[in-house]
Image 1 (cartoon, one colour):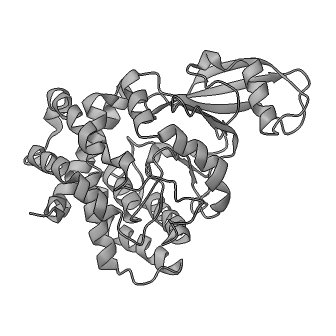
Image 2 (image 1 turned 30 degrees about the vertical axis):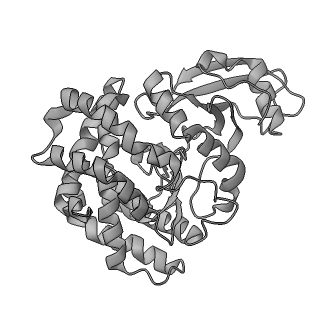
Image 3 (image 1 turned 135 degrees about the vertical axis):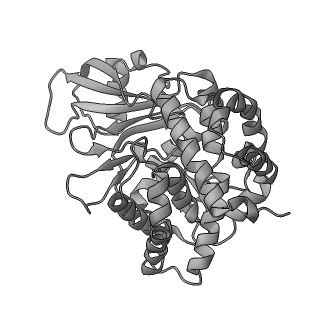
Length: 366
């Protein structure tokens, strides 16, 4: 942790602040930032944080000094920022870049030039490599193609296989598990958003879905325990299209951003989160089993043993039920601009259909 304050608005990324931050990480030597031009990035793409692209002017530029960086800082909306602090998302991502990123080789992530948190407030800030113009950002509204989904199943299997059964190691033992105190707050927090969801987004509920959601709230502690059964692995936690940057050539690795919801748990959580919220309903129905099989094949290729495809698919069903919290949270008060509202509506449709298609509610104890 440095002595620099965490900026709460884009205007607080002053030349002096950015200079000190980049010097502290060794990105800059004696040169100084003399001007910063901040432009908002990805309106509606992030719910728990704010993004701005910072164009930097130097007193004596040198090769290797970034011309632009992307700043991640606390959400401007009080309810979103409050949830982010409650769930320790700023701490998780800062510690990912400072402590875990170097251990991950199978999944590209952007370089972090600076990452820090304020232990007292729980707020955090990160200066990231700017991928604009280098890679194409994903679009959660449009959803993934089959080829993109196949590549993403392969990559997430690589990550999970790397950390399979190793979550007690010091490097990641601090990461919240789904049955731990951080996620345990969900059972109290999300039902409070349910009345707002019913009022503002109730028209999106499919027949029988309201009862399923209310049963899920009651079963969240049990679901958390099931998602935390061993062997656990490191899960990304927010594996969706808006957090992915795609290369020009199909089949090349896809760069993954946003590790704020990183957790320890059953690997198929990431698969269920992606499949239930980032793929068109009909496309998922047609290719669902094959994509989960591709993920399982990747685990086996990565050395995972004693974990059958049937076990994997059952964990996938279970995790899809847990993931209903996201459309309810978004539609229950976290969507504060037009694109965010559109994403909340589309995610509701995709998530609800997944849960009904899989009869996921049947996993709950009677």
